[in-house]
Amino acid sequence: MVRAKVTIGAVESNAMENDALAPRLAAIVGAAHVLTDPAETTPYATDWRKRWLGKALAVVKPATTDEVARVVRLCGETRTAIVPQGGNTGLCGGATPDGSGRQIVLNLSRLNRVRAIDTVNNTLTAEAGCVLASLQRAADEADRLFPLSLAAQGSCEIGGNLSTNAGGVQVLRYGNTRDLTLGLEVVLPSGEVWAGLRGLRKDNTGYDLKQLFIGAEGTLGVITAAVLKLFPKPRAHATAFVALESVPAALKLLTHMQSRAGDRLTAFELMSDLCLRLVRKHYPTLPAPMPAPAPQYALLELSDTQGAGVDALAESALAEAVEAGLARDAVLATSGAQARQLWQLRENMSDAQALEGPNVKHDISIPISRIAEFVAACDARLARAFPGIRMLTFGHVGDGNLHYNAAHPDGGDPAAFLARASEINRIVHDTVVEHGGSISAEHGLGQYKRGEILRYKSGVEMDLMRAVKQAIDPLGIMNPGKVL
Image (cartoon, rainbow, N blue to C red; front, top):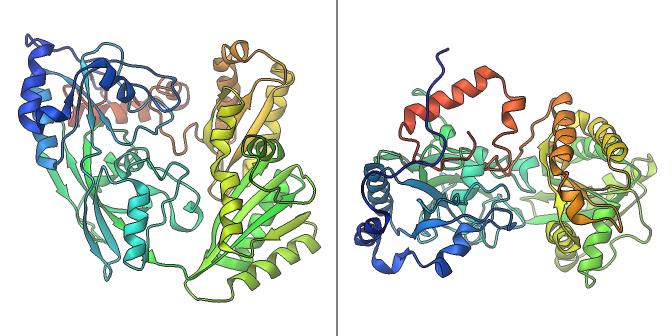
């Protein structure tokens, strides 16, 4: 295969001065929607974790697909790099400009309209700037379910979810964002618009182009709208918190619950005792879910479109699990308020870790059958290399996606610990690949793991990715310095 030559770094402007670009952008989107004052642009040039701080030439906020297309066309003419951005809740620096001050941030938050809901076809057509929670509400008001659910759903936007192929807590039943998407509208680097908003579940007329843009982190084009799948709204839920002896026990419980509940098992989340203790330390109003501590816990949910029976199913299946020694104990929520409290233990986990201090984060996926083997091997390797290291392991074990985070030892120096992050990453990522896994599951690569994939992807894979980039974005203006 011929190796494609593609510009990956920052794109240089032509002779046009940077300060001449802003008026031309303002002529497209309105002066009020082109920010150039550093006091206004800095929040858009800073990632959610405050790990990456860039400098934007301007923050441009279009309100329509046509405005996006005109902005992108202008940037192509002037060789100005574009960093697409939604709610700016990413964790890998994928929506943050570099420090050159020569890239614009294309913020899509004003594209926030639900264009259509089709309850017969079970689809919702929404623009990229729609906040995820607002789409969930729109589906609910139409007596349907949009199942994508994340801790950041009150601020993340669907364009960003599409660009990173977000997963969330209901992947076990409904799949990732990729599985929930039927069609896209995309502004290409040329400024042309691909109108692919088709609500079809079967379309075998060539390459499935939408899959190129889902998970591409804005490096191939700007997603402006999507046709998303809806589902019948569940009428009954059962939420349970289960105390477990070990990670292998969690996998046995997962298998047991799947055999008993089938696709009514909507979510299955794993968390360690240390994770639970940190959440309760920093959110003391949340009650202790179990009467006695355990090494591991599972938070699981069953749902059904029928109005009754799911609680009884959950109770009987969990009773069998306790009797068989698969679980130490189980607590079933008896009200919606209790269920929300149990979910808050999971949803506040990332924030609790941040409040505890800096840690080295890993968003990985492992074949479900090898999760326990991976955790045992990687925990042991890290403990040998970093005595006293604290492992904060939680995640969507039902689809193999773990958030495998490492914190400094009690009483240790956080700065000294973080200075060795690359060593920690190498141990974790090598062990992930040894166990047939991926170093990025749902957060993307962004800037954070851009160099890491060169260690783990074959030359053939990298050549294919570069060839796709070269074919669609030959000028290299789309989100340079990310993914590739």
